[in-house]
Length: 469
Ligand SMILES: [Zn+2]
Image (cartoon, rainbow, N blue to C red; front, side, top):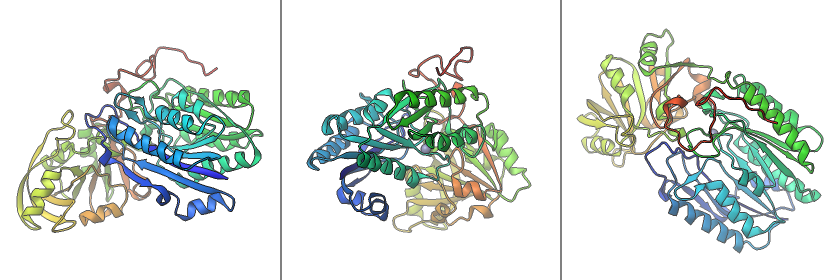
């Protein structure tokens, strides 16, 4: 059997004043998509993969229309050139919003379905932080999403989407998907799958999946920073044949999410910015990570708000690191000055000029990741090291700090442009505090200027009833 492979993945933060251009996308074409062991192993002997185009970009502002349509048109052209296929596998994120088009996945699925016709099975894998439009469910035959946040199950999720597809093709099954969406805005930071109530809700998925006649079950948290008509969690069940079976289970799961709406939260302390800095400096733990959650680049934050750096310098902190602040100009000044030189910089506050303002810093260049072509420069101002990067950069792992020549666990306070800590940091941080900072990825839903989400929606509206049935 022949199965086409492709995808365009983006998590769009529409509160960002920035735009996602074509340069932001990492694009793989043709054989480069399927040349690793995963595809050989999942496919087995009788599957011939027909790779098309796979494009992904880090979470960021609205996708420029020409960037999206260029990728979509190339994917469709390659799909057409691939000739007749039995199935299509797509790797998507969900939550892609395109200038002048709206929901990107709806548009992409429409184009793919038009190209392959009504009889070809289409299966897609998603990030659980995707927002799912009804058109997407209608166009797909099979869908599944990550079941862990922080994400630890990318490969198993893609494997499920692919193996379901192969099995359905072999057995001649035409599965049916059903979706029920509770009216709720839920930031990912408040739905960590290791923490209640998410842990119990996600534990339901394998149970549902194991029921006779059920192919797959997903619980999307959604992306609340995509201000659009489809932003909400989604309970999705795929049945082998019987729509009412999928419907009943999706209703039950969606109701369970709604019933627990007041219980979602993080398992780390959340504090206003000033209190977070004070608590970290006074902490007995050897290292405290502070997530600058409103400026979380993994949720489309600007990644250059220097406010916490300012507070640490004002507090005369020692052993503190702020990683990183996106500022290409400041990196260039450091590069030209060289390691050991004294520099005067105006740091950050340029990408997100709504919530931040530049910070004037007099410091010393401590490190450049490459003396002649540095992307990362570390500047020391008193006891505070500020890691500057040419791009919006999340320091997701301990190893990521190597580019700044810093061992984060040897520092007292480590500020990162994240919401929840990603797995390695989460597993190693002696203590973590989530600062409720302003920004494009503000965790306080009522602080954001929503215009397009359907109302009523919790927690913007609290006094309304809803039933999944
Ligand atoms: Zn995600």
